[in-house]
Image (cartoon, rainbow, N blue to C red):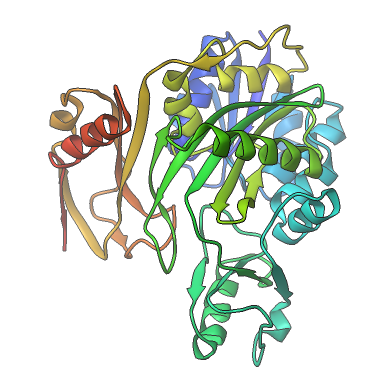
Length: 395
């Protein structure tokens, strides 16, 4: 039995573990939290930081994997690439992993390859005080090295810049900040599978965000309802973007804004998409390929003999219940929500007795609902109907 080691155990990794089991693999999982949501599904679980390369190497020596992957976890992308290089396993190069996780290196790779991207400035941590941008307001400020929407702020005037820079700096590991032009237009994500250097755009997802000032994600719908010409331009940009950072065999999750000047890159991850995008939505919205299983095969070094896929004709959506400030006393109605017509999956991620802050990024959620429909509005309406049945007592 072949052995797969996955670094990172958040809720969206559960389906990765399940699909690895469907493929007959023995699965090990590593996460710093001993109560990581995906831990209970793994055959073996190791407690440790996925940012700690030495600790991860010890786990790998003990587990003896045939493949190591990040799944839908952005935090472990660099560690996975380092481990694969160290152990001679298939995977992204360390250079690719760096460019796919450091937002400055990523933008520089886009610029070098002529991939459309926002104008930007880099502000080192020790230069935040007194900084004055040359970009036109409003601007977006965000850490150079965070994920999940953490630390993103919209700044509309000069007097708000320094407080926003300091706030964003605290959300990253290095403290360095990106200041970017504020792009306007529909935002999408693009699921790409690169096989032997050839990008295959499997699906484009319409994104629903909270809007200013933090733009955290509150829902997704597949397939995109944008015009065909726009989707073709988006697919072309996504394909060039993943190649520019060096992905040559594996999945990529690409985020793009369709501006008045055409599509522009937001950022990308050299991994599967989270937020149920590759754990539920894409499984229903396309036929002919299972993206997660294909990514696992590539991690094992297996060749994909043929790629044939198309839209299924159905729409799939996920909507999240963002957290609010207070302590959860109870969460009720989950079972009733699951009985709603069109609903595929409902999961509570909030914990009774735990204190929460108001949502400012993608990590702050109480629950989510996945549903399908004959069209976009139908799928979203099914999600809303289920959410109405969920009662969360927060005090």
